Structure formats: C-alpha cells, structure tokens
Image 1 (cartoon, rainbow, N blue to C red):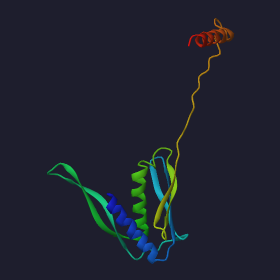
Image 2: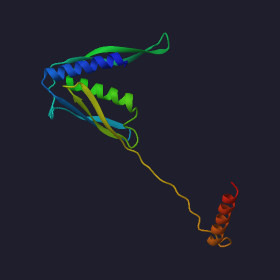
Image 3: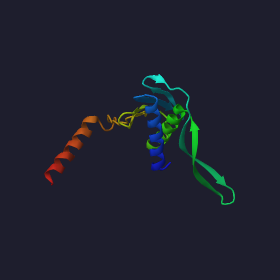
Image 4: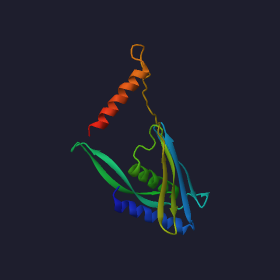
Length: 162
C-alpha cells in the first residue's frame, strides 16, 4: 500500500475512534513458529463494538492470464472498526518487520493516541543466540607450558619490531 493510502486509513481510524469517544487504542500482537496474530484490540481498555462499518483501502492483486502477470489493485472495503485496525496493524507490521511471526517470533503493542493522532509501535523480536568458544589445553607431545612460552616469545618479538 502506498503512503497516501496508509495516511487515508489512519485518518479514517482516528476519525471513527474520536467519534466513539475513545482516547487511546491498544493492539497486542504475538507470534512464533511461522504463526502470528493480533491478540487483542482495546479502546480505553474495552473491546470495540462492531457497528458501524468503516471504509478503508486495502491492497489486493489478481493474475492477468493474458499478460501472464500479477496486477496490483487497491480496493475500498467496508468492515468493523476492529477489523480495520487489525488490517492496519498487519500492514504496518509487514512494512517494518516482514516475517515477524517466523522462527522465535516477536510480540508487541501498537498504541494509537487519538488526541495527538500518534501511532506508536513497541516491538520485541525474539531470537536464539549462541556463543562459540574454542580452547586448547595442549597435547601430551606439546605440553601447555610450551605453548604459553611460544606465544610469549612471539609477543615479545613483535613488540621489539615496530
């Protein structure tokens, strides 16, 4: 979706939230293992009512058999405010953190401050980390103390020759 369409959707969402008297909306999401979802959409701590329907812009595509290519289209779709916020949230997540739901996943909160018009995302990405270290203690034919001396001599030699 292009920036103008995103801005139109933001304006639609803000207008409807304001009309309903909602000051702050929070969207919680989480996912991992190739599956992620919006967990909750709460306006001032309460679930949103389904009615009335709001109209937003949504990207879609169709395959043109004759041209053998995909044609991208933006359509106007009517849906509940909760669904509109959910669609907006998924679009924003895809834009900033494509694949956020994969592997160890991610979670976060999207907050919409209706009075200021600010949309904020607090996002946490999860990942598995590891550290590999290699140590040599020496072998029977090359004791550890000889390795240390060789390393020490090499260091001294290097320090004498700039």
